[in-house]
Image 1 (cartoon, rainbow, N blue to C red):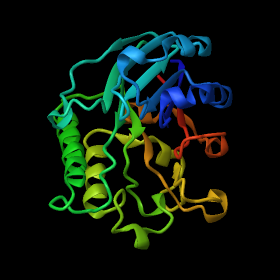
Image 2 (image 1 turned 135 degrees about the vertical axis):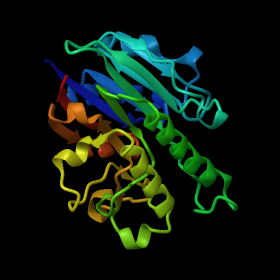
Image 3 (image 1 turned 120 degrees about the vertical axis):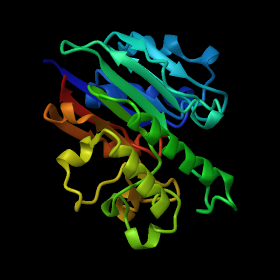
Image 4 (image 1 turned 30 degrees about the vertical axis):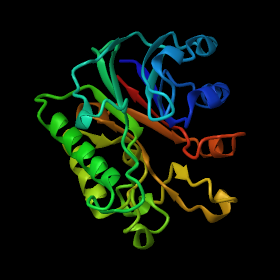
Length: 268
């Protein structure tokens, strides 16, 4: 068995914030970094700028200006190509790889779930319908895979599923990211074969956030956050969970993202 530290971060533009990855590496020392909203087409991926970080194994899928996901790894990996083109949109919201580990490969999935727009009604807002369809399709795909094991799923899932994952459950019930159709859909996806690794360490009745709006000038004082960034593991890996970190200080980094990195350490 060996220890594996996996960090996930919605970087909100890789080329704009590539310099902040040094701080992430210093603070968390992850073996694997999963990024979302890289916003860079594959031909312009800043591979050379990332080399000094010490993550020689990469897999990425991106497009100009929107979405995009990447995995940076110290551990050798092989690209996992079995997943469908979610909702048939080709919009670069998922990348996966098999990580080399002593106990056998670890399947790692990195997702950026659609944000869903502002109006929680699929007839008025197609973006909300797309989000619900994406989550349902992902749930069904994982549920249909017999014997799913040694797998980790991370990313900006853009849903805060529990009451204590938002600053006010009552006030946010009608706000996209915490509406019942979203939270029920995400919970069904989780239950299709995973365990919430961060809530393994932090009781469900305790407030926990990973995102604070740019509109909050003093985000620490108001603390109106949501837990949108997640790490899930298959049940066979749950006993190997060792620690977690939500790097709140990253919210104050210069020109930082509105999301902060989330990291989990487990034995594999």
